Length: 387
Image (cartoon, rainbow, N blue to C red; front, top):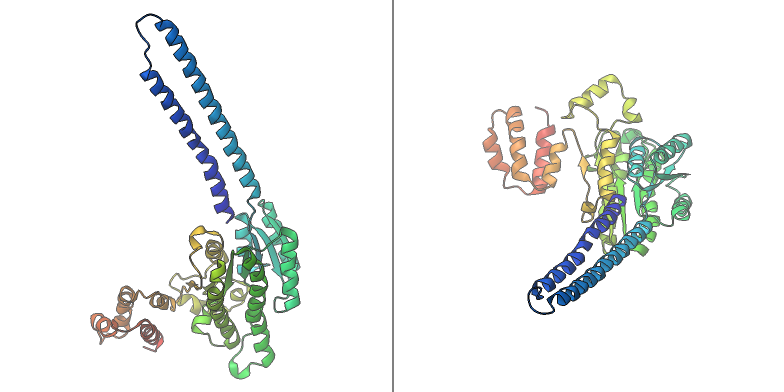
C-alpha cells in the first residue's frame, strides 16, 4: 500500500508535465492569431504590426502566467497529497522469529508501520523492531498471548494509540505439541487449538472492527499444508490449521462487502527452529520427498504475504489459500485449481513408471472424465500407495 500510494503521488507529480498542454494550447491560439493577422503592405502597416505584436505579447504573457499558476497549484496539491499519505499500519503476531520475523521485516522495509507481537521472546522482538527502524521504518513491540482476549484487545489498542488505525493483520502466532492421538493429553490438544485457532479468531474480530469503519483492510492468516492433508502425530495442529482455512474462507465472505480481503497462506516444510532439531535421518527422508530438494525459506513465505498485504493486484483476491507445497502433495494443488487435463499429463508418466502394466495414455483416458474432487482423491491414492 505504501508503495502504491507513493507511486500515485509520483504519478500525480509527473502529470504536472501535462500542464504543458494548457501552455501548448495557448501557444497555438497565439500562432493562429498571428497567421490570420495582416502584417504586410499598405498604409499604417507598421502601426498595425506593432499593435498586433503588442497583443501577441500580451496574450503570450497571460498564457505564461496562467501556466505558472497551474504548475504552482498542481505542485501544492502534490505536496499536500504526499503529506496526507500514511504508511499502512500492520500487526504481525508471533513476529519475533521464523516466518513471523521475515514477514515483519519485509513489510517494515516496504514502508509499513509494524507492531511486532511476541509471547516470550522479548529480546528477539526488540531486535526485529530495531532492524525495521534501521531501514527507515517504524516499529513497536508488544508482548501478549493472542489466545487471551484481554491481551488481544490491548495489542490492537497499542497499535491504534501509536498510529491511529490498523490496516493489515497477519495472524502468524502458533505452537506445536506433537504426539500420536492415542497418547495425546487434553491439555496438549487444547493449548494448540487455543493459540493456533482461537487466537486467529480473537485477533481477526478485534482488528476487523477498525477495518469495517474505514471500509478497507487486509487480513492474512498463516495456515499450513497439514491443514489440507493432515500429518501423523499432529492431530491438534492439523485440526487447528484446517480450522484457520475454514475461518479464512468464511470471514472473507462476511467482510467482502466492507472491502476487507481475507486470505491464508499454507506453507509446506519451511526452515525453522523446529526443522533444525530434526535428526539427520529424518531430515534426509523429508528432503527426498521435496522436488526442489530443500526446505523453503521464511523470506519466501514473506514475499507471498507481502504481495497479498500490499500489492494493488491482490485487491481482487479474497478467501483464497495459496499453498507452498513443495513436496509430493504439490501435485494436488493443480487439481484444486481445476487444471485437470494439463496436470493429469504431468501425473500420467509418474503413474506409468510405477504401474508399468497400464500405459499413461490409457490411464489419462480413464480418469479425464472425473470431476475435480474425484481427481484429487484418485491422485492422492496413486501417489501414496505402496508400489
